[in-house]
Image (tube, rainbow, N blue to C red; front, side, top):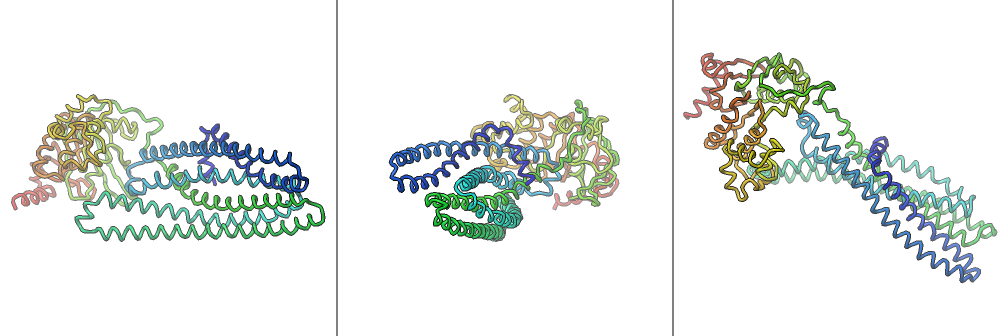
Length: 576
């Protein structure tokens, strides 16, 4: 229950509301304890002694008690729900902040749907643990304690006999609780798998339909759904066994009460009304025990989600600022790789002993086969990953010694697949610099050759472009990404195969925009189409994580090496 205690720490800001909520819960529960005493007085005084005054008092008392009970019940429901919702908002925010700070390597290992499942399914389970289970736990606990007190007042000897059964009930709850918690972990994992599969299938629906794989995806989903069903039914099986086990032990207790209490009434040691009241309290005692066993089972299942959430919160953020990290001043763009090596997986090098120097304003291109390490080099510059050995410096500053925000704030990236947000065109471009004016946004769009098509959209710059910008063509999305980078005005630019997915006409328009963008900036271009890098100051040919050769376009062709081979393949294709 260590993590549950951690979860309760999130309730500290709302401790006043919590105290008031618990007071309301206890007072609402106390109303239930009044009824058995009414029955006792009805039998021993009203019926036995014909006491009309007592009858009138009982009737007034019932109305008053249930009026107060309604008020306290409203208070408990509202306040506990308020606290639960606030805590969930806080936990969800903490998790979102955590994911925003996690390194790229984390997202390489975890699917998007899995990440989404943490914030949706697991947090929803936490809400159940805090709200529903907390109300029921305090309510039933209050009734349990109150019933015990009243039973002792009525007959302490009979109460002792009743309490003998409680340790047995507790042991049964403990045994079943462990099993339910383990199964709860499995249920949360199955839900994460379903969420991940659903996200994958929906986001790749074009691929699914193009390969006519609808039935295949249905089978995949049904298989995961069945696994989730099996885990859920295992939980039902355990909780269904827990409740009757507890009820059986409670029934034994009631049987003992009836026999011994009847014996005391026959011998005149107890009134009939007191025995009926005692039996009612005993039932009140059994019901909370039964309900608490169910609460305990549900709580154990919810704890599996709590454990998963805190496992994420406790993850180490590997890309973080050093305690003495400095702000990187405005750079000129002098970048040096000094014997850089990098491994995604330990023992499997992605880059080996890469050294290069890029002077301010130069355009550097990386070419090579797929998987050679081109994008890895580009990803190390903004510290999406940390180098395994060696160092990267900008204007003489080791990038590990400066703050991540000041480093990335001076680097612009135009990726192959542009990710746009489902908001307006204007807000998507303004993402490059949030304080930019409308005029600056439009100027950036003009520089990116995007102003023309934007103004033809239904609402111009205020047109909402839909999820991931799928309402736009690939060339239009790329020009918006370029406009975003222009607005940011970085001194260092990374173009990761920015035109490789475009048709010839779109490529020309986008390339013209990129040429404007690169003027005066240190530019790293990862190229698939060699025609886009003929004018590069230096071209580095990467293969198997090594720099095989480098030079200008003409120099590399004369070498007759890998670059010349790649060039001839593309040239021949163009003439085929």
